[in-house]
Amino acid sequence: MSERPPAPDPLPHPVVDNHCHLDVARGDEAALPVEEALAAAAAVGVPRIVQIGCDLRGARWAVEAAATHPELVAGVALHPNEAPRLADLDAALTEIEQLAAAHDRVRAVGETGLDTYRTGAEGRAVQEESFRRHVDLAKRLDKTLVIHDRDAHDDVLRVIDDEGAPERWVMHCFSGDAAFARACLDRGAHLSFAGTVTFKNADQVREAAAIAPIDRVLVETDAPYLTPMPHRGRSNASYLVPLTVRTLADLRKDDLETLCAAIDENTEGAFGGPW
Ligand SMILES: [Zn+2]
Ligand SMILES: [Zn+2]
Image 1 (cartoon, rainbow, N blue to C red):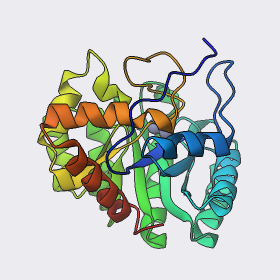
Image 2 (tube, protein in one colour):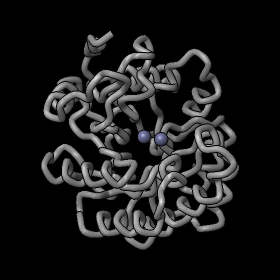
Image 3 (spheres, rainbow, N blue to C red):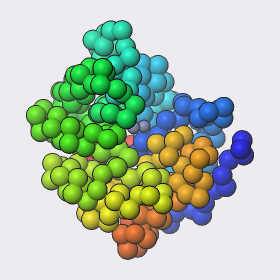
Image 4 (cartoon, protein in one colour):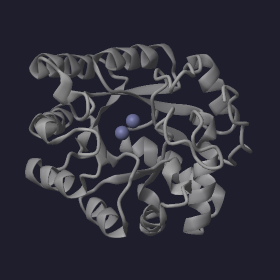
């Protein structure tokens, strides 16, 4: 299984992979070298990527990568499953704030949010506290808030309503139904769809993707996770984004090139302008 899935047909217009972990290996398969990942993605119409750092090491890596590669901008945060494990949340948040404040190429605070799937009851209070602090940080620094929501839809909305939504925010790997999509859209969110829209058991997510206005739709890999069909179970990478975009265009009945152009423009809007 070490062989990578083949490259899909190129897209007719470039799109951005707005959520990727270039630094993360999956299982025993090493991450692609960054230059190789960027070249493979660009060759199929994915010339830019938002690199997301999920812990202090990952956040430092993302800042460095975005400073080195013009194709990349960065998001930095303590992942909702990372925050409860930290010995000193305050100190870690201070470093995240320093990284986000000091570097123009950090466009996002994220991924933050709530995850009741991997974090048990004992970690939830810290997880929510961390989420609230990240919402505040995104607003104070005028960065885009990138939200991870796993089995926590109502609680994510509760915190957003309580704290007040930032100017720009993204529901990454959108996993809710059409009603939850509307609730997020009403509050100003962009909805980012991952390879999960290609999965057999994802009818509700497809219904959400079908009702989202074309100016609020984004696409992502969350690579190396969530590999789209027909390669589910293998390592994901940004060059597989076309499989997800084509599924979105089909289910939404959008012209492929029109959808790609919209996603490209939406991503720039969602992440504070071109790069
Ligand atoms: Zn996530
Ligand atoms: Zn992620």
